[in-house]
Image 1 (tube, rainbow, N blue to C red):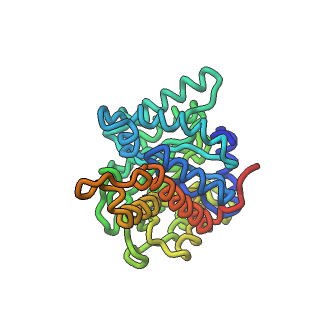
Image 2 (spheres, rainbow, N blue to C red; image 1 turned 120 degrees about the horizontal axis):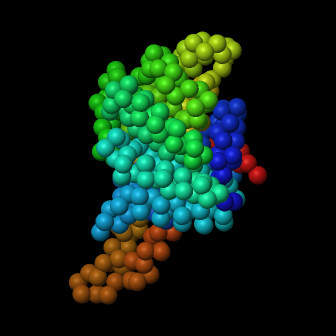
Image 3 (tube, rainbow, N blue to C red; image 1 turned 180 degrees about the vertical axis):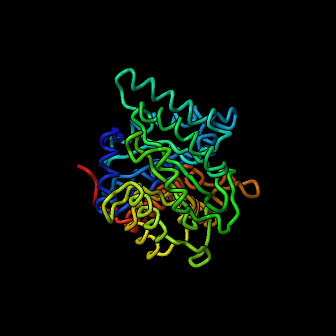
Length: 343
């Protein structure tokens, strides 16, 4: 299927929320990891989200110029072509853009989609993330208002992170402490500034103890039940019926989460969960195994010629793709999106 249209992407998110599942959002840094993500979604019969961080876009731009916009546009255009061979709907997203990179990443990408929409085409990306978690909430929401207005005009959904996620992601880092929990007041101020869909649709990355990186279960204190409190607080403020879920939540920093924590998050309105650390490992693990097992073949040891079949990138690249695809399939199973594709 082609990359999801704005209408299909909205339908994807609506279905996830109504049926209490979430889409894995898989970070990619190459055409190969893109294919691994697409393959995993197709094998799971799940629609999904593929995303490019600022660091990923810089890497895709090539080490000669490291141009983020060039890298992101190039892979997105490639994705629009190759995704047609996979029988699932895929939304393209940009991940974690802080304030100092807006002018070099999200704003130029919004301009690309604005021109496409003016020409009667669909946007290049279906959603963009503004990570203002390092700013004051007032400044964060002020910038979010500007970006949301532009995103809405370009038929794009905006993701906002209003409070910190612990750990480090592409150079943005926060301490692991009590500030990692969004308050009802934070949520109300967000609704006041950005509306509840009337000013444009947005995804909300609220904090409930999330931490980026690698952590064993139990090492991070997650409180996914907090999402229910945020929804209830805003619903009461705006006269919504009991049980209403005004926000479409995003789960960041999910590595090491228990199945119970994930399910609680799904029940409380999470529709997107970022997966990066685990898929990076899944991609690299079989490559390391191949190199260790075929040391004499991948290297020209003691003046020998090595074994071309073992150092051919296609040999170990296929192993990496299959392993990462299997981890994407597992993520779909964990998030209950398996078999939910829109046909």
